[in-house]
Length: 323
Ligand code: DGY
Image (spheres, rainbow, N blue to C red):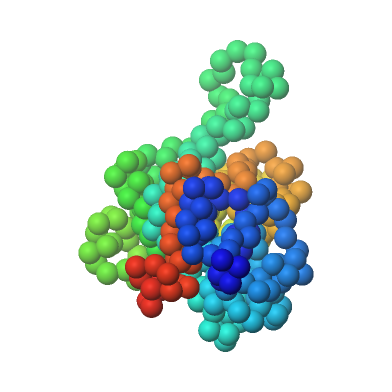
């Protein structure tokens, strides 16, 4: 069996799911959560035909330079800014991701952050645990309403549409969105969402949710100038990628009272969080857990493993690997 193709699995996924790879390949699976350096990734990929990686592992020209047998990389996640798709494409290495299976769970998380940040849930909890609650007070920890407010969505892909549905149907929100291109009428009416330009989205949103993919074109799309155009009573939610937001400018806006609150699940330098954000009271911070339910993580791992098996020509879809 030593001549079977070798594949690398960069982080522990679910054993039973990774086990399916053993039917076809020699599997180099990592037993514990590991921080891989670029030279270590390059060393792991050398001699492999495929790999299952997560957003932690950056795979680009440098990492694949000596991986002459590499034919496919299956990313466990819908965002794939950790992959240099141009470098992979130039070597005809197939790259896959895991769309759809995490849509609803990640849209739920947008609402978890939106509700926590607007209603000051985590701030109130810290206050209570610190023993500051001496009696019920009429005017303490006042937040902003979610129901009936205006929800803005920047990036109206599948997750953005899931956020829109929750807002329109669950909270009777007026939903505005901005996207690279306007959605067909049928989808707009299904989501009860209205397309507006970026300036209008900033100016009219009571809650603005970022669900954009990250790329050089979307780097710091929310910068000091964009924040200055938002309502001072607004809440900003980021479940996309940290690099969408200028975190220094956001921390300044929050501490200076120019923005009511924020909820962030993603950070520019994660897992390191900008110390200016850590020092701010009115921001809810979570450690990139948008898709972190057991069912969804299992579905993501299953899809990534299926993708790799298919891309390497062993699955039912062999010959037309998903992209
Ligand atoms: C993704 O899939 O891109 C998420 O950020 C991982 O939870």
